[in-house]
Image 1 (tube, rainbow, N blue to C red):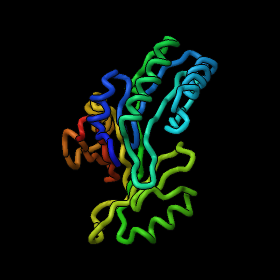
Image 2 (cartoon, rainbow, N blue to C red):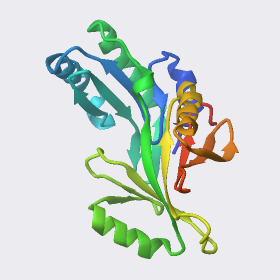
Image 3 (tube, one colour):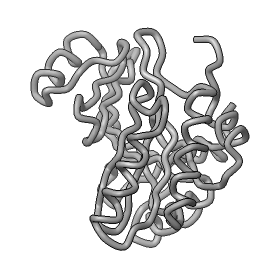
Length: 217
C-alpha cells in the first residue's frame, strides 16, 4: 500500500512521545480520574473529522483510555500517514482536556502456534475462538479485545520444544525492565536477538518472546 510506514517511521513522524507501536498498530494510554472523564475524552475523539473511517479502537477504564490506531485494508494491515495525523489530533484533544499520557501502561499480547499445515490448523482455531482470518497467517478477535493468534510455518516437527508460545510486545524503554523481571521470577534467557526480541522460558521450559517494535524499519 502506498504511504505505509514502519514502526520506526511512525514514531519519528509523530514525535509527540505519547504513542508506541506495540504489536498491531500504534497505541497511547491517556490517564483519567473517572469513567465520566474517560467517556468525555472518548466522545471527543469520536467527533474528530476522519475518526470514523480510520476506526480508532478505544478501551475505556476509570483510570484511563487506551487508543489503538491501525489501517485495515483488504491487502494491508499497518500504519500510514493518516494514522500519524489522527494520532496528533487525538493528542491535541487530550491536551485540551488536561490528560497526561503514560506509555509504560502499553503492551500487546499475541499467541503464536507452530504449524506444519496452516490451513487445517487455522481452520480449527478459527472455529474454537470465533475469530476472523487476517491474511493467511493470523486470526484476530472481531471485537478487537482479545489476543491475536499467529501461525508460524514449520518445515519439520520440533519435538524438543513447545509449539505454542506467547509474544509480548512492549515499548522500547520497558523491555529491559520486563526481561529483568522475567529472569528474577525464575525465567531463563533462551535466545537474544537484541535490539528487537528475546526468548525467555519459565522453569519448566514454556517460552515467551518479549519484543519491541519502535526501532524497526
